Image (cartoon, rainbow, N blue to C red; front, side, top):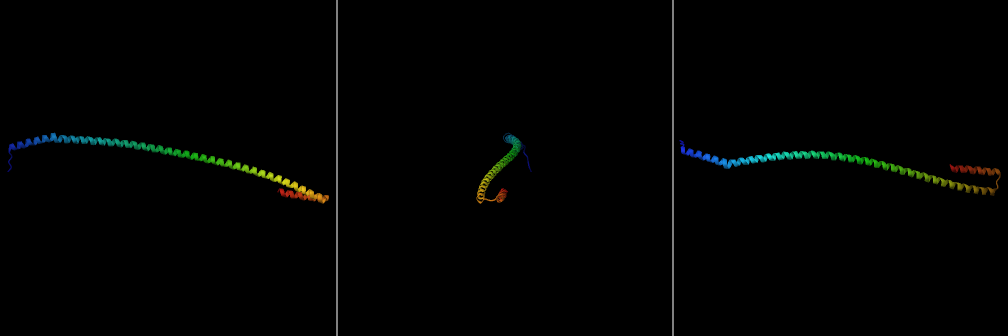
Length: 163
């Protein structure tokens, strides 16, 4: 059987109380302090993470805003470049038309000059032919009828040349 002796029971109770008091004072107090400190540090870190998350969201929103602004600016610049290209194309087209008109006018002037030269040359040739024909007529001493016939034929030939 088990016998419990009172002095031993009192000694065990006193020992237990001393152990409890020692543990509470030297072990549990610091352990609970460490746990409280750790809890506070974790809460601070959670708050810091929440702040960082809010900052990241703000930066993300700012980034999205900047991207929209950049997109709008690029569209605007593309439209400006397109308008400028159309304007340059119109200027090039107008310049080409002006140059074509100038070339056409020059060609017309050249043709007119050549026609005038041809008329002068034709007139000179006619004068020479009339002189030659006149000399032949004088040499042949033609009758009036023969003379009229030669002049009519000559005029017909000249009209054929003009056409």
